[in-house]
Length: 194
Image (cartoon, rainbow, N blue to C red; front, side):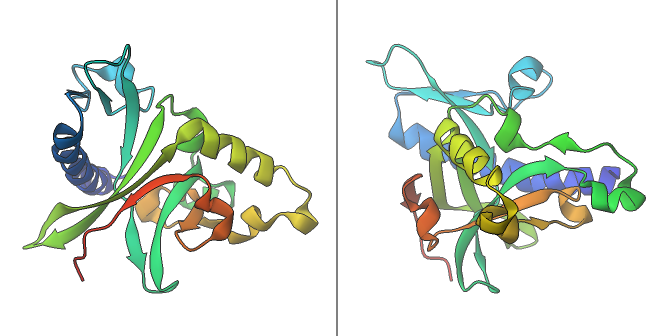
């Protein structure tokens, strides 16, 4: 991956993290920010960006923040993408990398928050819209559906390979109107921006 592409991904990701931090501080008593990779390298490598808790809770909830909740012009609705694997083998001639598991398989967070970010004045900013779910519940569901026989495997049929902008990731699009995923979504918070 080029430094330019990495910097772009980092900038978009940071906008979502800032949005989560602002939202979190208005919802919970304590929010722990683990996004400084130099200080929190071990935590970051577990796929954890934040922790939060209320004073009466015995432990914090660990969160991985994704900046990919968006309105799809193609599907005419809101969706987010789940990273099943990175560096898809079918694009090896373009990236020369070994396939790696995606964050749905290796993140150790408790929840995933997908934040909507938009470009304003040539800068990425969070809109306050987000969706979240319990990672273990979503992971179990995806593994179960992914392992079905090919003739009944709807999830592999909707999965697609992203572009160089996403490291040729094997992505599972989750549309909010897809009934198969509705039982897994804990909350959708939408702030109208369009």
